[in-house]
Length: 277
Image (tube, rainbow, N blue to C red; front, top):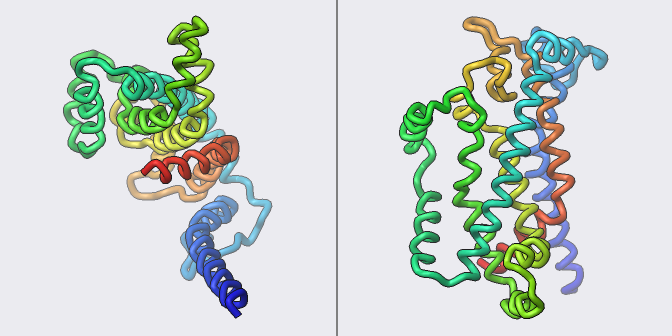
């Protein structure tokens, strides 16, 4: 009887989860289907869920030829990948040092880094913009990438995982004559791979979807990212929805690839993070 009740409970939970998964996936599926529709089909009332002609690929050819989407894609990939690599490496070193090395000001520095996570991004927008003006970085790549060196979330995440590394491993390596950098690269980094996977996905997604800051910083179309470039599909009076949906559909592909690559470590990292919390 107890076993039957457990099966019924599991079945109900699965039905609820499938329902919410379908609700969350519905806009995503609608976006992909709309990329095969003409603008007239997209704006038709009542809207049709499926396209009339599955072979309609003009939206994809238009977004690639008329809107320089290939350049936007390359720029987004460049900024997202470079920024992700910098955030992972810098956050890992800083988090490890703050977690395992005791020195004067350690807690003050960590508290200040945590405090940066509590300040809303819009509140820092004008000071950051003014700073870029003073440094003469407007329109330059450094204006997009500099924030990778001060990721409060990245340092906090790697700090928490570094705390779980046994000191005995580090002491044994020091006794064997390993340098601190060798210990970090050969012992610490491999033991923090789960956290690296989670941080890589979060950072890549944040940068890939970032619209406002690149919009303010980049002043040449040749440097636009995908979110900024897609705004060009909307005119003052008319929005060209077909190419816009096609561009968004193409833009999702790298995100899915990154998630598939880091899926295993991401889930393990989130699970371990929950246990530590």
